[in-house]
Length: 273
Picture 1 (cartoon, rainbow, N blue to C red):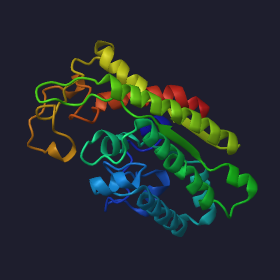
Picture 2 (picture 1 turned 30 degrees about the horizontal axis):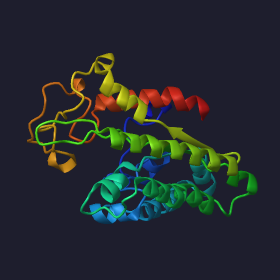
Picture 3 (picture 1 turned 180 degrees about the vertical axis):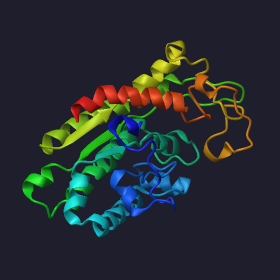
């Protein structure tokens, strides 16, 4: 959680009307539900493209400069931690969806997103700081690329983890680690870290009782097999004790699971920052 690094308990969405310019100095989220690295993913899910998310970031920077000036804004950004969590929706919409999917080869699509889109955040930051000094340009903040999650798709009456899609996730993550290494070599002075969230999630599925969990294949909301996101409404039936569930709905981890991931990330990555 953000509290681990001295931030506010949650990072509000940038587009939340209640967010004020001063809130930008301690972090906000520019993410868009069901979006991805691939603009095609956002178009199919009717969410914000990565380009649009970056445009909001630039807008936020202008607001910060108006509030505290150029020097302080640049200091905040250069010392900020940027987390990029994407990839799962890209695979779902463009490969596994047999109706909407644009790619047949899993490996080809992984290469496409990583070679053409995963480096985009880094290139964006380089462009953004193009007018800074050479020494400053090498330090563009800390970027964390997260892994693709394990896949446990729902069936009409039960849920299972599919080995082929989990193998795809592991292959994607292996390629991402190599890409991060190459980028780190090229951008001396920057820190581009790889956050493995696949491992703690799959360990929770295999060893639930080690984490105080009792249910790892069914979500807490509704049937736990089909509902996700907006389909889980205030009047939807929920489980009695969500802390015993790994998933809140059919797709998204519960607060308990996210806490496990956050603790794992804190121990693995923050000593490297």
